[in-house]
Image (cartoon, rainbow, N blue to C red; front, side):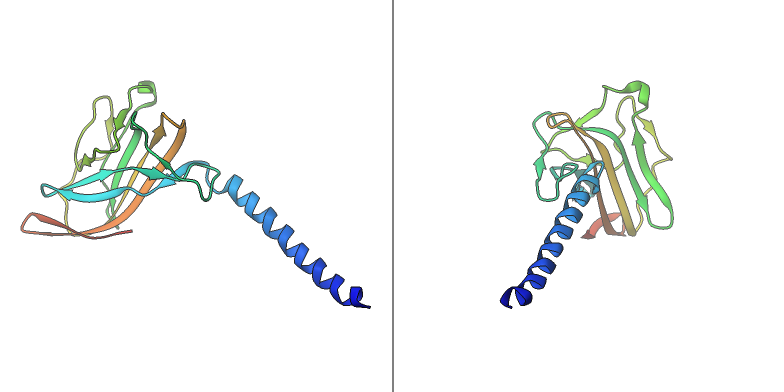
Length: 168
């Protein structure tokens, strides 16, 4: 009689555990085809500056990797303003593979910097107050991981002085 009471409860608990395991494994495998992480946004000498340091490699929910001493090989970078589109960007043409700019962990890219061999996307625009998105994509040559970094941020520009309001 005790088994008649306990068995359905144990069966239900096991079913929930199995379902959770299947969903977790499925989301781990398919969650990201690319690694992902945040772009660090800061102001240096009244210019926006972007850097990358840590990311989650593809297929992992809890593991983090740090960009190694070889740096992060940038394939493209885009800064977009909400409701206006790309205000600055550049990408490496496919025929130039192997000549990516390597962003070291202690470096940042100033807004408007142009790299050799890269094709400019749109024309660089003067920054105005508002909300922006920055995306930096490429690969980590140390871990052989394709990765995309992204952050959303807001700035105020008053008398040509830039201040960072918040970074998401």
